[in-house]
Image (cartoon, rainbow, N blue to C red):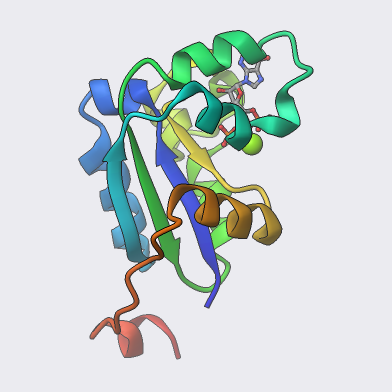
Length: 148
Ligand code: GTP
Ligand code: MG
């Protein structure tokens, strides 16, 4: 089954939004297979956002993302990558639809509270980067009530 890397950024943690964000993924029917609160190093975060290193906002992004703990998670389910991105909403909160996490809970792009993998390939890389110890495999008793 497909997996995606979802991360609650330092502003989401500080604002007490972990429960709200976890609730949305749980309620959707996705299965939590890894979760930890961690304060990432600069090097670790630079590697996570390596594709953006030439952007003007990159230093500010790294400063923001290393300013406090993040909640790192792996969610599993059919279409988890694309659906996870839809649930987060557009990168720019001013363009995120109401009903999405960013659309409902934040205002500025530089404080947009959550991250989601943008492809299955990125998800696999990000999961290995954040959970080198591996994830937690388990069978959910709700499976037959979520999938036909
Ligand atoms: P992530 O899920 O965090 O990867 O966001 P994304 O995939 O929707 O967007 P992208 O990967 O292009 O950018 C990563 C993050 O950089 C965004 O979520 C923002 O926090 C930040 N960012 C992107 N564009 C801008 C910008 O124009 N200005 C600022 N200040 N931050 C930006
Ligand atoms: Mg991205």
